[in-house]
Length: 480
Ligand code: FAD
Ligand code: SF4
Ligand code: SF4
Image (cartoon, rainbow, N blue to C red; front, side):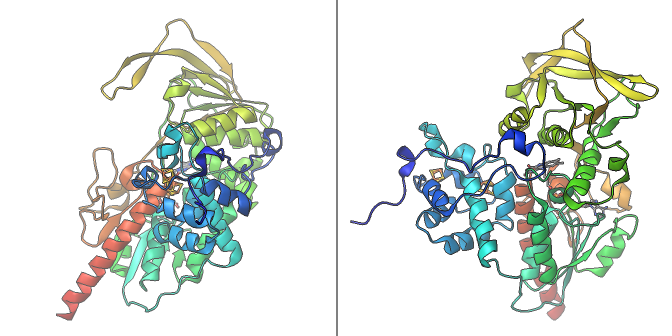
């Protein structure tokens, strides 16, 4: 009888790809996990118990066919594993690197519940597609037939690019407009290289260019070109502009020099460290933590990226202030652990009240100690101040990482009829991205609020199907 290749979770322990030692990785911006060797990827995939109802799959926003590609990997049929994996995911190697797997696929892997440790789904997904690139299995985008219609996509983040990929493969003429000089959105300029090396993103941008997608970069819609002008040029428009308005802090001293926004700081670092761009604010030290005492305010993934960037830039100390405790922070626990290993100190249950300054330059954060009070309507315990327990945390650089809000697009672009929700996000149908304007669709963070790359990909793929339907209907009407 043939040997059962799967269900090895009782005999083989969970084993992630090797993580570089903290001492080494804190000095560079390279990814911290190595790649699996082929035998290790097969071994780890073979731990899957091939569940009849795979919760991993239902909790993956793309509903990736995880059990099947694990089995193909375990049995050495890697090219087929790749074909299956890329059928539902536009950027599997990116999701394998940066999805918060502990909250999505792996967090719902049933063998975890029996105490065996989840299948390392993300690391295998990354391995499959990195191997496919190495072996030349990733095919160029080459539509079987060209279509006359064109679609304008505003925003070259994962939402816009996932849609561009599907539409171009269907033969549609696609133009992507972005205000930055490189495509990729937050995958290029937000997320640091130690989570996602930039050649992984640029390789995908190149694939789209080679497949015939036109990029109009350094083009700020609303300033360099009007939204109505884009609408007039194309048969359909997709808005995928993300959310970029940083939540701010008030209090005494809030205007001092040296208090900066997280995304300005991360963008400068990504440009300087990963692309070798000349960034005056980085070179002047305004957006550079080298030799400084750094305080980062916030407890989400952006804050985690800031603290770990500051360590790599050579800060003398890096502290993170968060108003709740470790168990109640929004950021990934895996990232907190990585940050602690690299030397970051977390000050839980602390909130900024204001800032001290010397000659207009920030010198410290006035910290209010907090405790967790009664649960609010959502069941989450609200932080409340402990009177008389303030102190000053010394700082030369303070980075505000308190989350992002959408910009007011209808006002910014002077568009009548583009409806927004009470949170300021663009109102669009969840399954199609259809907005209140005919032929205008919207996806990603500008619809969901700050979310995840994998959700933007899902939205982009879904909306591109709806856009194809729209183009087909318009073509049918024109032919009548
Ligand atoms: P974006 O990626 O924001 O792309 C929008 C694009 O639109 C940008 O390129 C922008 O330049 C362009 N644009 C905006 N306005 C205009 C305009 N008027 N004219 C022309 N172009 C315009 N998610 C994860 O899954 N894992 C992570 O580890 C992770 N880490 C993150 C770290 C940081 C620091 C941040 C800020 C976010 C992180 N996220 C992470 C979230 C993730 O990056 C976003 O959810 C995702 O990028 C949203 O995709 P999007 O396509 O909607 O928008
Ligand atoms: Fe898991 Fe993300 Fe891959 Fe889905 S896309 S299988 S959630 S890593
Ligand atoms: Fe395999 Fe875990 Fe998914 Fe079950 S839940 S199919 S064990 S990866």
